[in-house]
Length: 525
Image 1 (tube, rainbow, N blue to C red):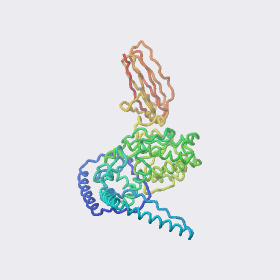
Image 2: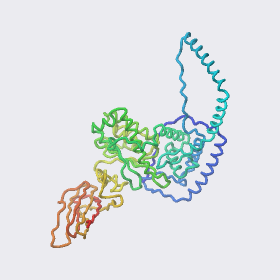
Image 3: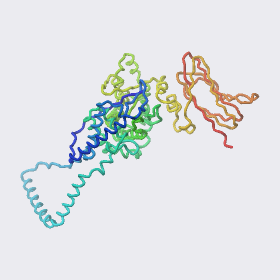
C-alpha cells in the first residue's frame, strides 16, 4: 500500500553566489561525476519496497527515478554542494546600523564640533600606536582571508534529522543524503530552485529554533495526553497518535493553550515529539523514512475554542514547511457526523487532495471546509473510520498487538506482562453461528496463565474455564459466559495439571474475528 506525501512551503530570498566561484565549479563537476557512478551502481540493486494497490511510498532507489527526477536530484545536489563549500547556505548576520534622528541646525553645529574633537583625539592615538597596531592589523587581515577560503572545517559537518544526523554535503553523504534530498524534491514537484530555497529556509529555522538540542529539553508532562508515539505498522512506520478529545477538559485546555507563552511551549513540544519519531527512521532507500499519523476526533472541542485553532494552525504551517514527506498515511477516527453526510453526497473526493496535517485541524474545527478545500499539489490518502469500524480500519495496516486497547487492540501502556519478543497474536475466524475454543495447556502445577483476547466485527458470547486432567476433579469457572466486544485480559494459577479453555460463540449472522495471545509463568520452586 503506498501513498505519495507532499508538503508546501514558502519561497525565500535569492541564492548568493559563492566567492571562490572557480574552485566551487571544479568541486561541483567532481560531485556530478560521482553521482553518475552512484547511479550506475544503484541501478544494479534490487527493489526492496513493498508494493500494493493502495499503500505505496515512492521509491528512493535511483534506478526507480525517472530521468527528469534524476536530473533534478543531481542539480539540487550540485547547488547544495556549492552552497555548503561556499559558505552561503545560511544567511549572514546583518550589522545593525541605526539612523540618527533629525536634529535642529544648532544641534547639528554642536554635534559637528564634538565629532571634530573626537577625530583629532583619535588621530593622535592612532599615530602613537601605529607601529604596533598596523602590524597586528595586517596579521589579522591575512588570517581572515585564510579563514574565508577555508570553510570546510565547519560547513562539511552540516546535517539534518536522524540519530547523529544525515550529512547534507553530497560528496560526503551517500544513500541517506539522497533520501533526505528527495523529500524536498517531491515537496516542490522537482522544481529545483523552489525546493533549494525551501531547504535553506528549513535549515535556517532549525538553527534559529535550536532544534538540534530540543530532544534534551524537559518540556513537562502536561501535553503528553494530547499526542504521543506508540508502536509501528506492518511496514515499520512509527505511529503518532493525536488525541483531540483530551482538550475538551477545561483544566488541561487552559494549561495547554491558555496564554501565548503556553502556545509557544506547545509548538516547541510538538517539534520535540516529531523529532523523537524521526529518530526511529533509517533513511535508507528501501527502508522506513516516514511516519503513520492517527487523529482521534472523539469528543474533540469545537471551533469556538479559538486558542486551539491558533496553536494547531501554527503547528500545521511548521510541519508543512520543515518536515516534507514525513507522513506516509493519515487516519481520522470518529470524525463529525457532517463528514459522513458529505461523503454520501459524493463531496469527499476532495479528501484525497487535502494536506495530511491540514486535515487534522480542519476536520476538528471546520469539517465542511476540510471537505471542500482542494489542494491539487498534494495527493494524499486519508482514511476515515467510524467508531464501529476503527479496529477493522487500523488492522489493515497495523498489527493487532500494536493497536492500543482503546481502539480494540492488545497494546497496553506500560505492559509488564507481554514484551516485544512475545507479543505476537494469533487470529481465529468466527463464522456465523459458530463456536470456537482456545486451549492453553499447563501440565505443571503452580503455573500462572496470562491471556489477552479481543473481538473484531461485533459482539460475541465468551467464557473462561480451567479443565483439569484428572477426570475426577471439577472444572473451575474462571469467567462466566458474558457478552464481549472489547479487549479482555485475565490470569489464573493452577493447583493441578490441566488446561485453560476459552470459549467464543458467534451467535450473529455475520463473520467476525478473534485475536488472542497467551503465556505461562512457571512456578519458581
